Structure formats: structure tokens, C-alpha cells
Amino acid sequence: MAALSVERRDDRYVVLLNRPEVRNAIDRQMIEELHGVCAELETSPRILIIAGAGGVFASGADIGQLRERRAADALAGINTRAFERIAALPMPVIAAIDGYALGGGAELAYAADFRIGTPALKMGNPETGLGIIAAAGATWRLRELVGEPLAKEILLAGRVLDADEARAAHLVTEIHPADELLAAAHALADRIARQDPLATRHTKAVFHAAREEHPAVDLAAQAELFESPEKFRRMTEFLERKKR
Image: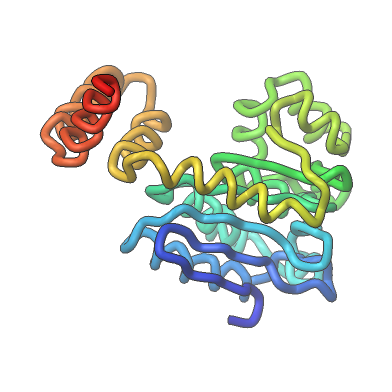
């Protein structure tokens, strides 16, 4: 891969956005490679950790490419489709954010299930200053994540959050020194990996189901899990531990 570095483990993938010479700006090549990673994780579900090389998560979309895109490109949803696919992956996604996560970089982070960062973190959506909107998920994901007033400050007034502000808004849940960030992401992935993978997958799917689908979707997932051999194994182990 030219734009990503991918480490494949038994229970997780670690994807490094790897265009440090342009602060990991998201170009068409990177999007295509992210689609390739998603195809693998849809077929063989694993936890995904996404980070950036060179002390930057992603400074945004590649402006050189973005400037040349026209109406048909907007309607094709080049970045949107990739970020939607990442958000819909069966297992949780962790964004480990050092430095800038702006524009499309922020929207990629918003698509993750967990966001952790460093003291150097800067998150925002400066798209209106470039004559466009944040059309790859920020206009609705950000409101869900931080609430309407702060989302409007970021989207309409160009506010960029630092690490403390992002944590206070619960946009990120942990702050770690840069040299400990990936270790912290792996520690979080370890906690997830200790859970039953099928129960984790069902929980993520049910969590993101539309309101009108509840409670039917919850009960259907639970019905499958109630017949799962792993449920019986884990509950038997729990009861045996209590007897000791």
C-alpha cells in the first residue's frame, strides 16, 4: 500500500495513515486503500486501530485533489462512502489521534467508535473557510457526539478544539503522551478483545440501529446469543468462579 501501513494481528488491525510529507492528507489513493482494509474486516471481523504517522492524525482532505472535484464527485461521496464503511465495520474502531485531525481527518475520527488523543490534539472542521461543507459525516455525527451548540461552533464558526476541550466535550475519552498513544489504543483493544466477539458485534449493531427498530432488534440479537456455545461457556465459568 502507498498511503497506508497495515499491521494484521489475529484479533486486530493497526492502520497507520502514512503520508507524513503532506500531514497525512486524505487523497483518493488513501480512500481506495481504506476500502480495501474494510473489505478484509467485513469478511474477517477484527478490531481496527487507526492512527497517523509523523505526529499528525490527518490534516484533512488533499486540497489539491479537492479543488479539482466537481458536482459529480460530490454526489459520488468519495470520502463519505469510505467513512460510512468504517463506521459500519462489525467490530469496534479506535481512532488514536496525535496532532491535527481537521476536515476529512476529523470526519474519519468521528466515524470511529472510540477516540483517544495526545496533548497536541487539534480537532475541527474548517471546510466553510474553503468554500465547501463538511459533507463526509460531520454535519450529523458531530451533533450526535458533542451536541448542537458546540457542533455549530465547530462547523459554522471554525472553532478548533484542543485536547482538553475535546475531552471535556467527550469527543475523546482519554489523553496520553504521544509516545504512549498506540500502547493506550492497544490496551483499549485488549479490553474489547476480552469480551465475546459475537456479543460485541451484536451490541455494536444494535446500538446503531434506528430507534424504530427497537426493541425487536435487541430481542433478535439476544435470541441468537442465548443459543451461543460461548454464552454457555462464559456463564458456566462465571458460576464456577463464584463457588470457589
